[in-house]
Length: 157
Image 1 (spheres, rainbow, N blue to C red):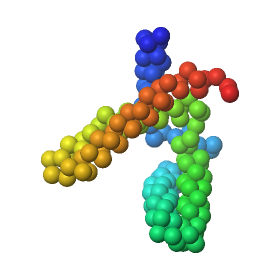
Image 2: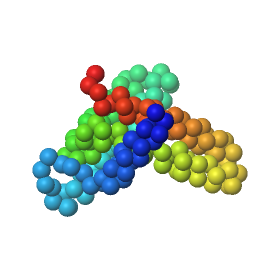
Image 3: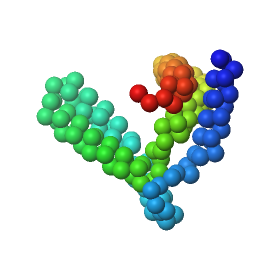
């Protein structure tokens, strides 16, 4: 069973790596328009998260009206991202989306956050390094969850 899972994971990861950033839009989109959609996604994603964080802070400070405005705006920004992602072809069949998630989480826990933790530690930023290591551990759990979902995701609910 373990060997079968490793083979399935390898196949999915290989397909995902071959398809990174190739997209599969509903219709052929011109290169400049594709780049503009990518830029839109790159702008909308962090804006969504930023406004969500602002809303959480405002709510914690007791500023409910401000929190509500920020949350509504974050939802709007999320819709902008979703539409651009759909037209770009980022979101595809479930097996492809899962493969991309597996590969992405692996890179985050195995490279990105570990390297950032090492740099933070070398710079003397111990608290940040500890946080990066905690995030890496959580990303590793996400990776394992997605791998476990492979066989389940191929069956309809």
